[in-house]
Amino acid sequence: MNMRAARYSGPGKPLSLETLPLRPLKAGEALVRVKAAGICYTDLHFLSGVLDLGIHPLTLGHEIAGEVADLSGASSEVTVGDRVLVYYYATCGRCHWCRTNRANLCPQVVAEYGFTADGGYAEYVVVPAANLVKIPDNLDFAEASTLGCGVTTAIHAARTIADLRIGETAVVYGVGGVGFGLIQFCKLAGARVIAVSRSPEKRAKASQLGADAVVNGTADVAEAIRAITNGEGADVVFELVGTEATMTHAVNALRRRGRLVFIGYSKDLFVASPLQLVIGELTVTASVGNTFDELLQAVDLAAAGKIKAVVDRRVSLDQLPATLEALRKGEIVGRAVVTFE
Ligand SMILES: [Zn+2]
Ligand SMILES: [Zn+2]
Image (cartoon, rainbow, N blue to C red; front, side, top):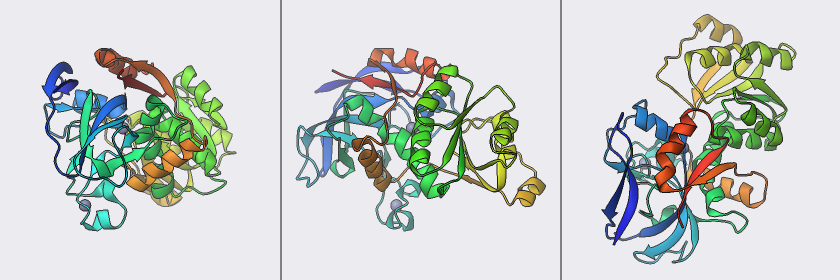
């Protein structure tokens, strides 16, 4: 059997739509008929080479929702026909990091779907059956796909890394798929949320999802945040952009004992004054990916209607390159999702 897939051939090269043979399943694997694959900004980092794992040709796409089409061996979790979401890390399960519920840091990752192994920009994907989570009835495939990275990465950053507390002020600096997840999760966690974006559409959506204040990204962001916080600054700034200008504003916007959490990045270097860090007892930290447990929490919150998926548009696989370009230009509010019939 064959399938259509959008293939990545390395930095600086366009994606190519190809027809590929499906490989046979190994023991414990599931064949998933992809119904929706969310388009994450990370894919643009692959195409530009800001992120280069050196593995290609490869099918990108790590926010994957679909239907179980086949199973190799028994699975206690799912059966053929189930609507499922893919946890995109397959890790060793034996190292210190896997054993302490930090599998996102496993140094012996077996496969990371859409990063080091073929992902969801294809009609089918093969993953371990143990990586599948059932989709709640109130979500369609496109909505469910956005939980896979957007919402789950937000939960990891806000709770596990930032240890966000009730009453704290959190800045979501850059409002894309993860940013909208962060705004909602930080509100649920009892924080006051300030969202920063250059786009009026994204600021409006941020307010609609509960942000207490919004700041135009073209303004003096640090000054605006100080004004909103009576000169105190923010307890936590989630940095989702990572350019020289935004990093400077982010540090300057911190309250004493504030935590800067990097999630986004560019090629720019982070330069900070140690004196400024010392005087404020500031913490600079970072957040990568998520754990299986956090995916289950994201699914539970979405099932309960407490976190909403923000789907900007649904496109075909053929429209993927043009949609990535729209994402690069900042035209996508939330997630664009590739959907399959
Ligand atoms: Zn992602
Ligand atoms: Zn491991």
